[in-house]
Length: 234
Image 1 (cartoon, rainbow, N blue to C red):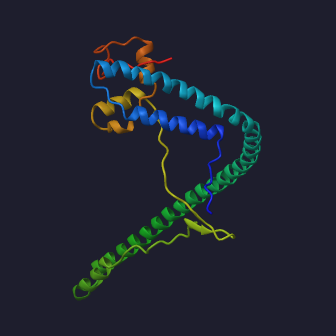
Image 2: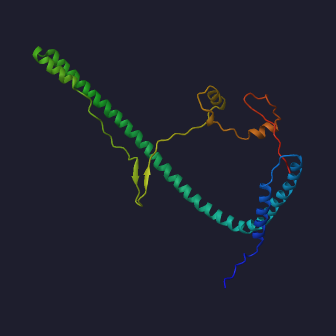
């Protein structure tokens, strides 16, 4: 004979059942006249009470694990800070070295290119002088050689952009940029002129500032204010 397993009744299961029952009733209700509007208020109070019950149920559970969670978090943070400090240090060392090596390499490249150009110009000038003093039959041949004179290509060894670590990982240098706002007014002017897209601008705390300063519609150009209502139930 097969026996039916009865679900264990726990405070959490009871709470879940109450939430399901209440929310199903609410989500199936429609406000379409004065009577249903008045009746709907009767749902708001139970929903508010249920929110408080849920918070009250989970609060002691959260408190009981908070101390252990905090201790572990602090221990993790301490160890990660050591790693971050060491990582920042070695990154700065590598970046400083690479920047200096890139500077030296670029300087050497420019010097070698300058030398190659000087030698090519000197050889071209020599051939042109030779052609000027050569018999007419030989001039065309010498001038052709002068035209074929080119600067020798310059090859300078650089630090590899990508390198493999002993553990098998890879490191890659990526060209990037840093961007900061030097003058907010000038940047906003560029946005207004269409030189910078509006999507790059982020307005924070705009609503709080508007309410705090009692800004009225039309008072600030470009700022649209629309009156709304929200219901507070206690």
